[in-house]
Amino acid sequence: MPQSTPLDAISEDDALSIEAHEELAELLAIARETGTEADGLVYWTRDEAESILNAVENENCDGVVLATQAEHSQRRRLLSGDTVEKVLARTECDVFTEKRGEKGDVGEETPIERILLATSGGPHARLAADAHVDIVHFLDENPRAESREDGEAILGAAQRILSGVENVEIELAEAPGDVAEAIVTRSNEYDKTVLGSPTGGLLRQSAFGTVPESVNRQSESGVVVAQQDTGGASIYDRWIVGDRTN
Image (cartoon, rainbow, N blue to C red; front, side, top):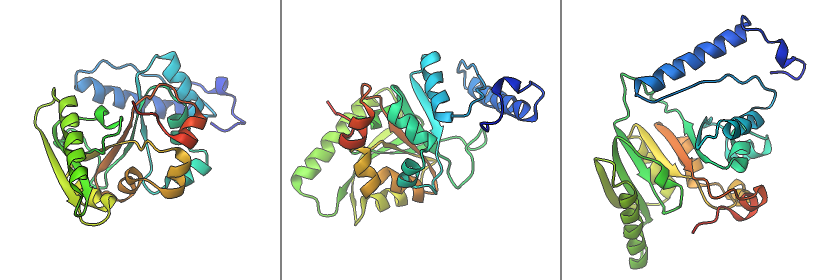
């Protein structure tokens, strides 16, 4: 809400209040159709990021799902103080960011049947999976034997993590050129593409870009980027150093 609007002056019959509660009711109905227990709250706020962080703490949440706009680069989001980037930097729980696919919203008539899980062995990819999952690790063209061995180890670890999920297949694939382009091309065959969040510092990411950002901006399918809680690293650590991996 604008700074000039007293939050305690918003009535239940206000048009924005009615719209917000209607949207909340739709989301709850979708969740409950899957058998998921769901409760909902409407927050009136002048600072989205701060309210999301407060809600995570107050409701003791284990994870957050946020929508992103593909046309906005991470550098632009960082410089503009984007809500998603603020939450990613400060929250102490798992975070999933989702870009809707250009093929239309996925609903009851278009269920998610195929998921591409592109993994590079980082700590975040383990958060994703359902439906039929193809786990793919992309190698540079004409890879060295050591790179191929590392890739096979990464795929084996991912397969073990998803041992409770049916219909999982693994593949070691060579990318003829840029890895991000290879993932984008492959992603268009799937309903959703899931990638782990980059572990490099945000300063380096904003300067050089990342594979998840490139896929998020170019893929026609929906893209989910999963960031696992890494133990409450400080903003400075995540900005300069990146996430610590054990």
